[in-house]
Length: 112
Length: 114
Image 1: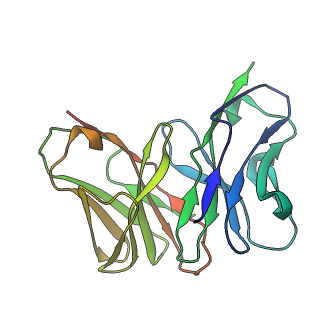
Image 2: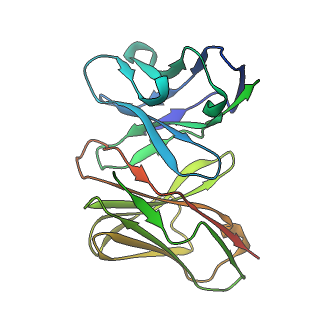
């Protein structure tokens, strides 16, 4: 069965530092992968998605993610975080019945 | 700009009340979804609708029902609210693609059942 694992429940980084959020998936075929962000009290907003092609995907707000099939990973990165990046981040894998399986989320805290 | 709206941002109800959560999308999407979000559990799918009057149970449908009479509107119904249904409820919509298309989310309804 499809699944998504985000091993880190909380991550704290200093403002201006680089960021990497980990995501591992389990899927039998070529996966359709997503990263969403949820600011406090808000719904989810799509950051980026991978369907095919270039394994390095650029998203909004300066985020990027790299699909590594050999490691079943789709880690999210940002070279320099801003205080406004504090939020919860969800990795997800799409299914052929149009549903999306979400990870449990990683909450990002930013130190000034 | 795509838009999914939910009827209430915050709702307080009493145990045993019938509760209606409304979701409207303006993107002409066939698919609509209801999730509940709880700390440490992520998003769990309650119900999914792939067309008007069509619905499919998700992972946690017990205690919930849904209605989709018009393409743009998808309602979640708690027939008799219970305290364990206190949660954040998120609605989403997407196009059908058979591949896991991007879902667009509303702002959420935070429901408190007393």
